[in-house]
Length: 147
Image (cartoon, rainbow, N blue to C red; front, side, top):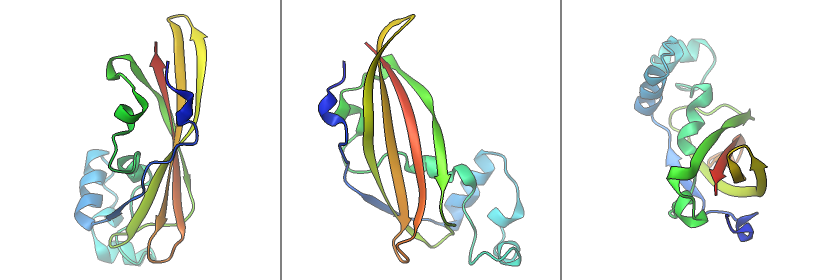
């Protein structure tokens, strides 16, 4: 059983500069070969300032801070099930942007299922553009941790 003291716990913020190479590698990995992810001229034709990030790119920024999310909460990987992710987008991020992001544990709820007791953990990672201070995204992740 996970400690409820972690409800509303905020991990330290992190920041990362988004690069064209990183965007291209991610686009290849998800097999999205839209030229806007590889060619600056194509991106500018579509009114982007630089190469834009693909929609699920922020998966890379699920957890922030120096502390390991799973170790901090005491989650045993052998008892973990990914319950899914949900994205909300607010403004466009492009190569060259520096993103600041932070993870917060929204809730931990104990439930009973066919396999026994489990904790349902919901965490939100929010990101913003450091230069403009515009909010870029929220990623909600749900984790199921069996007892």
